[in-house]
Length: 340
Ligand code: AHG
Ligand code: MN
Ligand code: MN
Image (cartoon, rainbow, N blue to C red):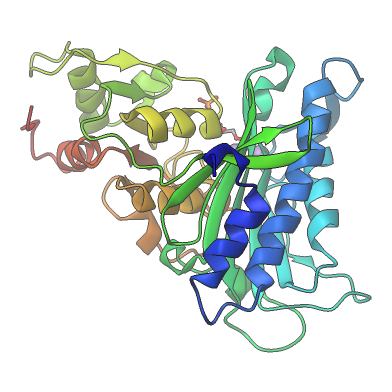
């Protein structure tokens, strides 16, 4: 059968059958998430038409201007996920504390952590934005989940994924058996398998992706690394293209499909970097590693970091192993010896 006819629902079920112990709970979770994605896709698609743009004037926990679409996406995901009986707790980038399951609904064995709308500064310019999600199995007992259930290292995720609302809406996820991409066919409201078994190309395209505007705030090692990519540091290198969208989901999706290195380093204003460990770095690191790449905070594997707080930030380097390894060595002061 033509691969484009495989719906997400069928694919998830086939994946579930490969795991004899599967209860179907994770299948239902993923399916519920796609329903939220379709609603957010609809609003994003007409955001330019309906007065959903513009600022609410309220800041979120990070003190950033919250766009109406951030709040809408947060509510859509919560309302899609709170009643299925598969979750014991949720946490969102847009909420300071835990999101407990309303008492009228049953709870389940899973935990959902999500960035409801990633790249919100790009909404008004109609640049690709996204939703990122991370799913863990709970590690506590009782009806309601707790902070401990949310603060688990990334290697324990049972699923991770993102939706990118771009020229088309794509969903990419992993449950630990490879990375698979689906494209939404709005005419039938179905995500159809379009990118089975995604692997980061080796060798990848020579692309580095960073906000060069922060150059002066970086450490010496970090500046050396980017000067190598530029070919301006007198230490070889060069021959790279620089690409930076400013929406993590878009920059990561390009890195996943084309190769290269995405980096959001620490700087003298954000010593822990800007990106969030639980809702951005950890889920994308799982996808990156499942696709054959690597993801570190500069020295540690992202998936090995033991989270200490819900909104913890981390520096992030992810993409082709070759370039992540180079970043690690350079930041450790081990010079710029590179394979090619
Ligand atoms: P969010 O919209 O969820 O707050 O995420 C924005 C993040 C991420 O999408 C992107 O990689 C990064 O902000 C861009 O930051 P700069 O504008 O500082 O480069
Ligand atoms: Mn984000
Ligand atoms: Mn966000």
